[in-house]
Image (cartoon, rainbow, N blue to C red; front, side, top):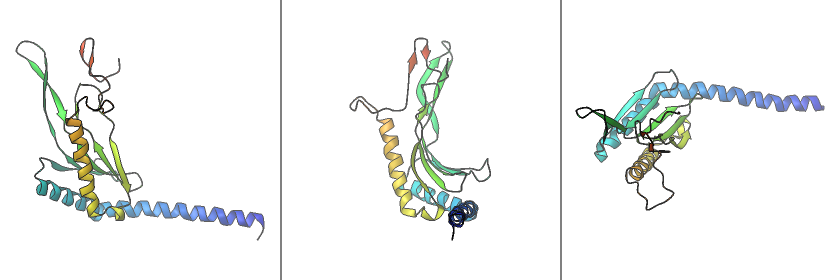
Length: 186
């Protein structure tokens, strides 16, 4: 075998690997549609029921092959409001956080924690990535671990204080000289 044949052989291995990856993407997307999405919903609902957590499971399917299943703690009034006038108050809405299982472009599943945030009160903290899985790697015991991590992160956010100087709740700037930070660049 001459040098060119050796190079072609190595190139062919890379081409074959590329084709395998493309096939896996199709396979993973099909697994999501034919059962994985429902499995995720079912397990999350079971965890909500078993723990009596006030949450709901929401499915997002706006973009084909980029679906998501969220365990969301919903939205509420934050307890803070802006006085527009003596009679009118504008409540600041709090998004309580969510645990997200979302398809990636290649059919793998990314698991994320979306932290709570209060609208018009600083910048939301970026999501925390727990892991990325191939569909067959996403085993039932992992869901409990993901929930434990989620609840711990949300609890830390809610229990923020200055006991730990490097602990941040995700706000870059809470107030500007004119009042509430709109979260929008000036």
